[in-house]
Length: 143
Ligand SMILES: Cc1cc2nc3c(=O)[nH]c(=O)nc-3n(C[C@H](O)[C@H](O)[C@H](O)COP(=O)(O)O)c2cc1C
Image (cartoon, rainbow, N blue to C red):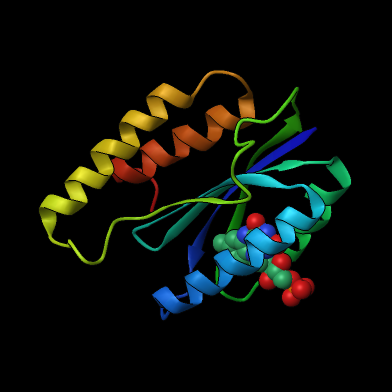
């Protein structure tokens, strides 16, 4: 098993429809090649972790890197791991709810994601870097 995590900036005009398209393709293709992971979209940044066979992860990351819907793709960490951290998710997704937008909802989303990041860290360097970056994004250190 191999894990990889990166951050990127969404293109300025990205819409919910575009993101939902990315998720649909991702979940189908990831399922077909046995890839699992998690994608966070917040403040126009993406942070993603993908896990699966090394060759699948490497070639998927090359495709993702070339994708025009985001830029500044920055590798956070990659490496071998024993077992999966997101075995139930072909691509779990976190973003704040648009229906209940407003500063209360934003704070709630950030608080919950922060809590999740503290509960979920620990097992691998890639996973730790993923959650550390999520926390940095929430706290405004990563823009
Ligand atoms: C932020 C982001 C995350 C993505 N994550 C995945 C993913 O996990 N799996 C996947 O197959 N495609 C993902 N994609 C889409 C790929 O870049 C690519 O468009 C897709 O795999 C289809 O490739 P193809 O056009 O060569 O068939 C992602 C794209 C973006 C912008």
